[in-house]
Image 1 (cartoon, rainbow, N blue to C red):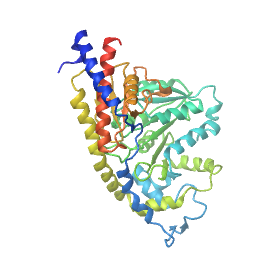
Image 2: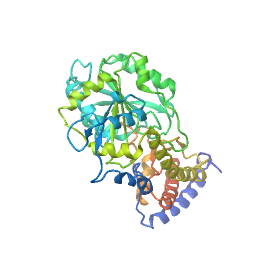
Image 3: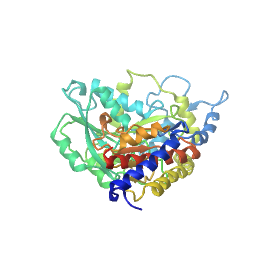
Image 4: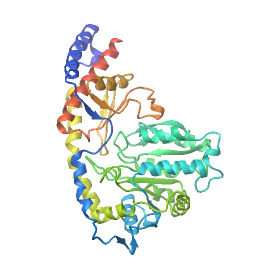
Length: 425
């Protein structure tokens, strides 16, 4: 197979005509396929349906003597703290169980920091003329949306499958007290699917920020979401304690992609001092969260091993979809000089790295043919990928038949956009 860069203009022109004809054939089908977000498929949602039956009108709704139907227990019920503390690798007094969404907890945490500061703050973050956050890229668009909404300036930090550019991070945090924190998706990174190395975790934990109230927002959203390999991630809170920075990290997680998105359990883990400080701030916001939902989750899973067994079932459903995506990329695009892709260990995405300047055109072509994908640029702050090359493929939601067709359209779109770029069209 000849790479497009090796073709002469006549060959490229003929290739474009053939690809355009194939693309027009797909477009004529009037398809409506959606791969825009990492939503669990219907078969995954079905796994947790029995959980809805563990509580009923005759159930004992107490947890260690606490009536879960009533007010109270602002930081969560004891059994939920134990279960999700084990999942996060922390003790029961180092975790707060909140509502249904870790994203909401992250937003609230950032908002409170802007309004009132964090433990150790001299003043609220919002009282500074400028607040900056470090953002490993490619990254999670919702993190960037929070910062943009709150007026926090974002700084791109290059990310590989093994972690962010630590030399750059160490330099930036040490020299600027307006750098108040950084985002991290450390395991099965969104969207590359790799896991931070031990060295990266230790260097993050040992940071010496100019800002005494610097915080790491450690979004461990995919802590148990293996697809091909259950990789090991070093415990950031343990490493922060060893480095003398016990209060520097907030860890977040949820069951959104374990049980039911929007009806799961969210949690954040941190030092005991941070728990005490945060609980005082939460007292102005809420009296309690949905303890019945916490109890439902605990009684369904019973323990962390039960939760992990559920994730093995998720992996069994997701793996064929990821296989289909990677097979299509290998068979249709390998050797053509039309970009590259990363095989993830877990998580919810396959990252496609197009030739520079092609990502927006590829996503636009897909949409034209009836396949909706996450916007090109969503992997970067302000929606601006400087190289216009990153595309996030989300295989989980479509049926196998829809996924197969969507990947055919995606591959044709990649090839067409690449040839157009080389022709200067």
